[in-house]
Length: 634
Image (cartoon, rainbow, N blue to C red):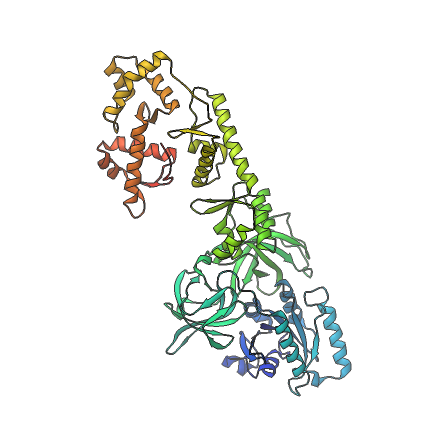
């Protein structure tokens, strides 16, 4: 269990930690000279059962609240310290507000310096404290009068802390590893060491992790968990990690040490905000603030997502637009302070750590945020599936919910969903997958009704008309299912309903038999309409009309104006594009390489590549063409 102190300056927090552990948590020379805590201090004590209690001692001066916040996030138990002679003071209240906004519900009060006052004063201050705690997460928590001078009450407080540690137990080890870095130093002969609270997961010797947000790969070569050498560390422990492949100057407070899959730095966080009732005015849209999350600190703007402004004591959805990126997950707690960093304003619970920059106030977006407000992963995903007609990105969901691949698989097995493997796995509620199938059938039916002499639509046309936001590879699987179920048919790249056929008249069929061989003589550079008409002494308009009809039937493809290619030639050209893309490191095809491969002029090669861009096989990037939909059929 990790215990965090809280309270006003000079109320005896550090002295109490020393009385409980025998360790002076003031480690800086300036702290000892000035007799006040400036930065975070750490102490540990062993329990009878061999477990270790960790203490994070925080500064009480208002100028160092930012340091207090770096230590308070991630604690299991709050020890609110109030001096009996002073009673509750301004920082007592602000620290209590911070603990409440962080969602800390386990704690105790230590009423210190009781040797300086009489019993009546102790009773009076105890009453004031209980009133102050009312309505907070620490309401009704036990209060212990203590004196670090005489030792009175210290033993009783320690017994209570041991009992609380046994009652709370160890945190559940789930999700990927996350450690919030609050210190970094160099040890002679060992190298770089970072310390912090483990928010989730487990770490072991030799693990390869990432330093975030820089993305620097690191390796763990030594671990101290709860101040003891260990082979592994886990959620709920204070850990010191000896890291290879990184220098002290590359690490700073506020960084994260993460499992690689969690390294997704973001400058935006969608949160549920709670504005303190003690605020005298509403929080307006785009208010500048300071944001504290874990040991991370940045300035930011508050973009309110609902009715603005947010009234004191109220709650609202908001997007925090940070001035520098961080890595967060659903459920992380953050604190907002005013632009001058002198006053705590609000607390937030992270809902989505990778929100969109546009459409953040749409009805569907707010429904998704409502799903992220659920406390259980299964309920989150179930609700998300219900409000996501285009499916849920399972990798994105797992990263935001901090689920390992195994945990995600277990979760999916418990839910009725349709899992589709695209460039990333997508999950659909069965009703949404069925709706998409019906939409495809309806779109094709309307196309046949509106253009009866056309065979149908190609896959990209069909996707854009039916589900333009659906990933191409996912849509391809949707079509494949419809084909397998006999609900759709395909002729080359053209999709149509079963039974829909178009035929040529006998006269046109005879004309086609004269034209078709010319398209196959030089399949990669067939003649244009006018050249075919001249060669066969035919009317150019009649040839053009017939080839347009043949294109609607799927026999040929119109690659450029008046330039039609046989279907087999286009399929062969597509294979060449795939071959050339596979031979390059970046999957890019140049016009020159394609021209040389098919033996045509540059202009025609460019026309063919531009056609493939239009139909979705490739996409143009400057002077190259990148393979986009490798499975597209012709």
